Length: 397
Ligand code: AMP
Image (tube, rainbow, N blue to C red; front, side, top):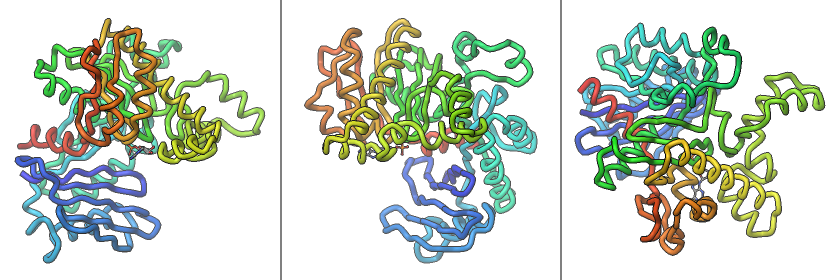
């Protein structure tokens, strides 16, 4: 079966068509500047990318253009739309209600709307994408795959905040965690490679991308993760601050004459390694700047690795040990210096990276720990689209 995987943002939409039997990507691309003007990128496997500027007033036009490109006579990957057996939608926040992926119907859409106040930037865009697909492909089954669902196995002691209990009871204020599809995919892959049952491995997955989070996966279940009610908590990230003393918010608001949402905008978009370095959120730029002697770029890089190492240490304690540390996503897969620096903090728990192997590993699945390391260290490229396609087939196939 061919699965169309849709990841819908407020003004953009990424898509892939995956053959669920061969697990090959037949075509992929994205729509950008939806509601502004519109640009479609389309690439059939084995062919060059095609980029066309086309009006996309809403997500419906964007998806309609994607479907036309997919079935185009010359470069289309499909003969007609009936070759799409199902659509898998990434949905950012499932609250406490969605503990696993599910087939989308009116009830599910209502449920996603009900938790939208927890992800006001993301869930409404996801719903717009789902509704547009349902209008254009009314007879094709659709599945929702939630970023938060994998973390719903966290114990209460891990997900509760030290706040008045009524905020949890009344508003469901708690840690949810994100990147669940990636943490689940990578931790399963680790067990496969190790040839062990998923239920018998303790893995710490470091999803280090522009958004970054760490997850403790004990015996196949997420038991703790670094992101919280929103993706702002946890590690210092590309432009997000990660953990700070909440008092900073009022302090900055008064000093800079800002309101809370303006300060939060700064914490989300102007902080992190970009805010510290004043250079960029992109690690390639930071490493280049550090090489030229830029002190703040060096500080930002060292803050990042330090925060990753601290979370790994605390999650090893939370699980009473760790068998495998896995690095994934843009930085985790492509930046040997970060992996080496992180692991450098962890010698006390028997972590020993093979520096000679590590330095050559970019975006490939590879064991990078030394033979005598007590904890195995892997680089595992994440593949959220494939994970969504698998979940979709599991539910409708
Ligand atoms: P993601 O959000 O997973 O797409 O990751 C984006 C981050 O990965 C950016 O900070 C990039 O700098 C980083 N990244 C991607 N490719 C490379 C690379 N080849 N070398 C170093 N960093 C990379």
